[in-house]
Length: 119
Image 1: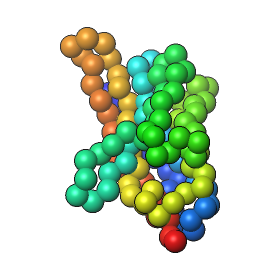
Image 2 (image 1 turned 135 degrees about the horizontal axis):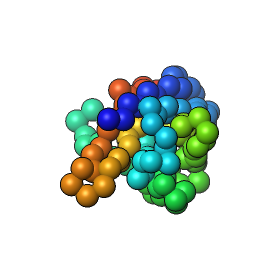
Image 3 (image 1 turned 180 degrees about the vertical axis):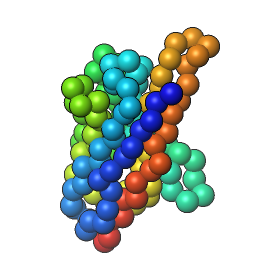
């Protein structure tokens, strides 16, 4: 079982920055991959950025060059630094962890944190 707690959401004007944090209840080095997803009303949840156990990162095209995912292994924390925010980035952001191997592999979600970008 992995518990994830997000923080850092809020309101910001377009062009501003926010830094989201996700605290994991287990060592993030035991997690296959951690990522940030977002889900706008009426739309499917989409991957924004993820980072593997080995440190490889990937980003959704619309956030490349603006968002950066990082981690602090000692604190079991994953972050999403969001710069040059746009109104279309407004939605709820969720932290996700893929944990376990083979048949026991499971995904865990945080409760979500709201990001609002005003024009």
